Image (cartoon, rainbow, N blue to C red; front, side):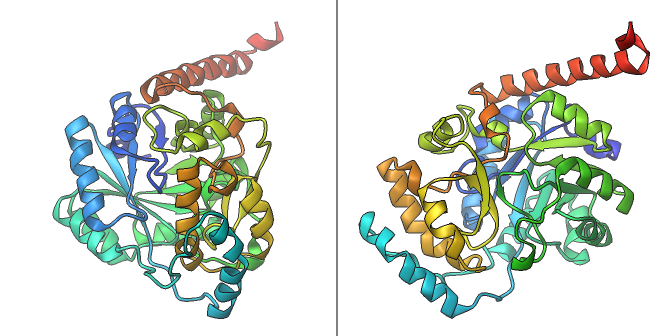
Length: 361
C-alpha cells in the first residue's frame, strides 16, 4: 500500500465498518489508539447521524479513521415478489406484535448528503460498499485530502475500482460476515463467491492497486497469510464484534460462540441482498423464499428485527457473522489489536524458520 496510506495506521489491521449500530465511535477509537484503522459505518444512518458520530470519534482520538458509505442501488426489485414476501412475513409480524416496514421508504441511503458533508469536513479515509463511486467523486475526495477505498468481490470488480481512481481495493472473500459488497446484485451468482486467499491472489494479478484483505480473519496467523499472499493490510469485522466497545446487541455477541449456532450461511432473508449470518430460525424459514430486493426487504423486516432485539430473541435477529465466528474473543478492542499483532509476529517468526531451513533441523 502507498506509504502515505500505511502511515495513517502503523499496524496492518483495519476494523471493518459494520452497519446497524455495531461500529460505534468507541470501537473505532479503541482500534485507532492501538495503531489500527478504525471505521465508522454510515450505512442506515442519516447524514446528520453520521456527522454526529464523526464529531464524537474526533473527541475520542486524534488518530486517523475511516467512514464507510453505501452506494445508491438501482431499482431492480420486482414489487410483486416483495409483496409475496411481505405476505409470508405476516406471521412474524403477528408473533412480534408489530407492523412490517414500508419497503419503499428510500433506496439511496442519503448518499449525496453524506458525501457533501465528507467533502465539506473531510475525514482521512472513506470507503464504499455495493458499487464504485464515479471518477468525479473520487477526484473530489482526493482534492479534500481523503484516501478512497472500494470493496470488490471479483477481479473484474477490482478492475472497475482501479478505473475509478481509488487508492486501494478491499478484496472481500466469501467467508466475510454481513453483506457481500458485490457491485451488481445477480441472483444467479448466489453462493458462488471466491475464498479470500484465492481472491487476493487474483486481484493482485488483475490490478496494480494495494489490496486490503477481508473475510473470515480472526487470528494474527491469518493476517500473516493474507500479507504473504500480497495484501497490504487485513480488515476484520467479526473479530471485533464481541468486544465490549462494539455496539452489537448482547444477544448477537453471545451467539457468536453459542453452541446452538454452529454455522453461517449467505441469505437474503433479512435484507434482500446476500449477507452471511448465523443460521437461526428466521434464516432457515425465510431464506429460501426471500426475493432479490435490496433495500426493500431490509426496510420490510426492520421492525421485526427491532422487536426481536427488544425481546432478546436470537432466533429473529440478523446475526451477521463470518465463517470464523467461533474464534471470537471477548477482549477489549485495543487489547485484541495487541494480541493480533503478537500472533502476526509469531507467525512471521515461524515462517522465517522455514525459509532459512530451521524447520528441518
